[in-house]
Length: 207
Image 1 (tube, rainbow, N blue to C red):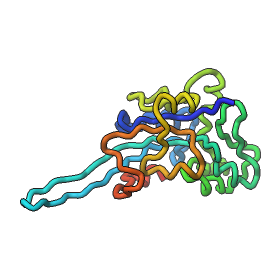
Image 2 (image 1 turned 180 degrees about the vertical axis):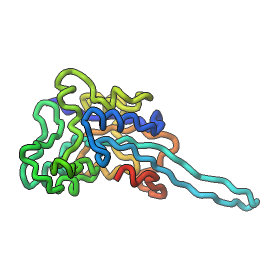
Image 3 (image 1 turned 120 degrees about the horizontal axis):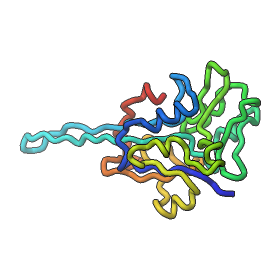
Image 4 (image 1 turned 60 degrees about the vertical axis):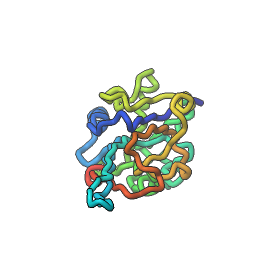
C-alpha cells in the first residue's frame, strides 16, 4: 500500500488562505465548514533593557492543516458506526456518508479537529485527500491552488526522504498520538513545540 500524505513549508506560506478557498469551492462547503484551515499563530512581548531601550520579540507565522490521514486515526478508532475507513491503496481516511449518523464523535476524538459536522446534511465530513482526483492521477486542489508552492502531496516516505520527518509545529498537537502522515518545514519565526507563548490569532475563523 502507498501511504499518501502532505508536506507543508511554513517558510513559504504567506497566510493568503487560497488553499482554504480552493478546498471549500471544490467540496461545495457551507460557510461554517473548512476542511483545510490556515492558522495565524503569533505572539511576543515588548521588553525594556537596562539602558531603557525597548525591543519587541513579536513573531507571526502561518500553518495550513487539514486531515493528516494518520496511521492511527482517532476518528476511525472512535466512530460508533464503523463509518470511517482507511483506504487500502492510498492510506487516505474517508467517511462513509451512508453509515454516518452525524453524532460528532469523530470530530471530538481527532486532535487535529479534522472531521466537521455539517448541520444541513446531519453528517460528519472531512478532507479525503481529494480521493477521486488522486485516484485519477491528479493532485489535491489545495496543493494545486497554493500560490507559494508551500504544499506538496505524495507518497509520505518520498516526502520524508526529501524534507525530513518533522511533524509538529505549534499550534498543531503532539504527533505521537495518531502518527499523522504529515511533514513540516518551519520558518525562522516558528516557536519550539514546547514554548507555548504564542496564540492562534484567528481562532473564530478556524474553530
